[in-house]
View (cartoon, rainbow, N blue to C red):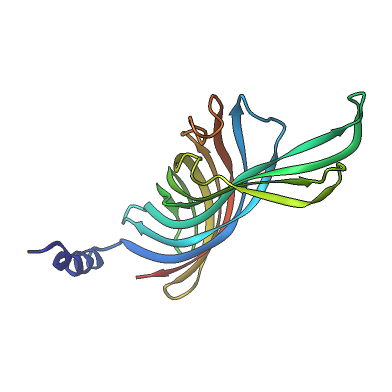
Amino acid sequence: MKIYRLVPLLIALSNGLPGQSQYVGIAEGANWTNIRSTNFVSDNHYRNGIHGGLTYEYVTSTQISFAGKLTYTQRGFTNDIIFMDEMGNPTGGRAAIEYNYDYVSLPVSAGYVIGRTAFGFARIGLIPAFLVNAATKAPNFLSNGEINGTISYNITDRVTHVDLAGLGEIGGGYEIAERWRLSASCRYFRSITNAANSNYLSGSTIRHYGITAMAEVQYEL
């Protein structure tokens, strides 16, 4: 029997198991991200980026939750250039350099759910992420030292293309109608892998971390 013929059978069998639930949904939210680094810039500021995508969750009869997502997520940070005079003293002027890294991610997690109509949950897991775009945006300095907008440098082909991070997540929600529920959650993530490599900031380490806040609408299958 071919594998694709087994899919309807597996779905039918799983639907027949007492006490278990399956949900599909859509999640939207925001990221506040930064980096941990060595041999690179410090005193960085958080990047505020978007985060969202499709979700799936399986909850067992013992309230154990297994969740997977397919999301587009923006990470990065900014760093300030401090302007100096001829004596090396700060003039009070500054400009920001943006380091932007955009990924398609596949977060997978497991945890525990408390409640049904009103519910709370906590999960831990991993986030494999695949780079789709990376760019550095810097001030466009004119020959007289004035700034005329920004200039963007595409560095997608240089940054490490695969990132792996650990995650911890807590949240809660409410069943707003039959088979429909709405939830909100907060997630902390921290990368294990290094975005720098021999072709990008060789000798440095760049590891993403941050907080993601999400709202999610789910439908019970």
